[in-house]
Amino acid sequence: MNDTDFFSTYIQQLKTECPLPDESAGHAIASMLIGYRMGLYDRAVAQADKALKLLRETEHIPKALVRAVLIVGSDALHKMPGQVTIKSSFDWEGHDPSHDDSQTIPTDDMEYAFDEDSFKWLAVLLPEEKTDIRDAYMLDTALMLLYGVAVCASPMDEQAMEEHLSDYLVQRLGLYRRETA
Image 1 (cartoon, rainbow, N blue to C red):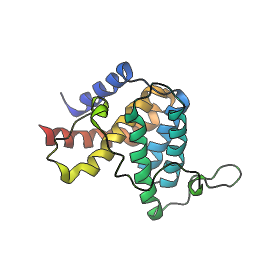
Image 2: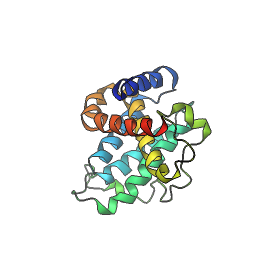
Image 3: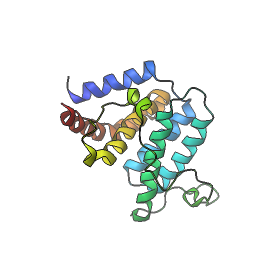
Image 4: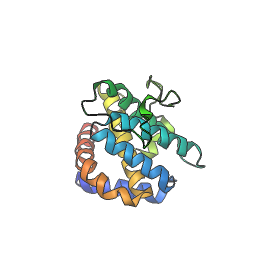
């Protein structure tokens, strides 16, 4: 099975087996992912914070989804000082939510790694001996999981996500599949 078919099968598995958030949380996740991919890290942080609040209000959501948002949001927060584009998160009142002191994204992501309970929701599992690529794996796998969840929970975002993220994630998935073969 090629990587594109494998990724499509993975997304279908999430759709049928994973308890999904509602459309507003799915949209927040999609906005976070697109902002992250486009280098709009302030937007990704603001949307991650919004998604976390919505996910925590939803029952039966796997902890893996919250961890994935934490992983991506934390990475975006670390990259935000190097953002080369103009700030993208201003709301109608001119407020910049990326400088909100009430953000729930932690600055230390070491405790935000997928645990054994999360493994069933991940596209590919990395062998334990591959510790040299652990951080990249956690981020890429979080992006894959959140992409699948957002596509399923917020169909209106599917085309934008496919344009900005799909090829990148399929390419990354292929690299991990070869590492685990």
